[in-house]
Length: 201
Image (cartoon, rainbow, N blue to C red):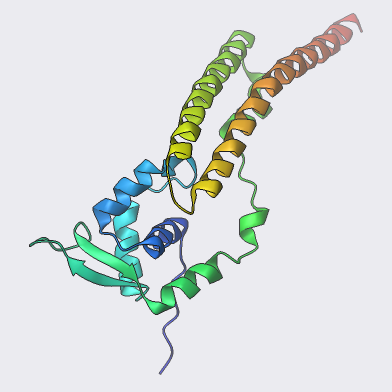
């Protein structure tokens, strides 16, 4: 009889399992806690994914019901806690080298690489839109940093470090936007010069 293979744990699975490793929760509590921690900024786990992960982790015997609240049933109100195998599975998944070697391209960099083909006025407008977006995100992250400093718990230093990194990224990109604008002007000059040389010949 073949041994059943353990399921591959996705990012939503690991986020949910990590939260339950901190303390048992039911599905709605998991969703609310992830919203409080602004999960969309660091993992992008949706509400449906939370409930799918709860079901998947329960079927894999990595979490189990602790108790039910009232008459409700299902992942909404069933309080889940990790099984003995859960912490090892979580630790194993976090030892994979791929965590440190991925480089997903931000959409704005894809746009920047293609922007030489865009109309100049549209490029200027989008760069300014990006600048305004970065300013808004900086204000949001600075408010988050202030809120984290008022919070308590063992994860506060890590949360602060993550927010600080995000703030530095946004500040660096704001300065880089000026370099991008200069690089685009230089590229347009080169293209214009080549077209002029072709006509002269």
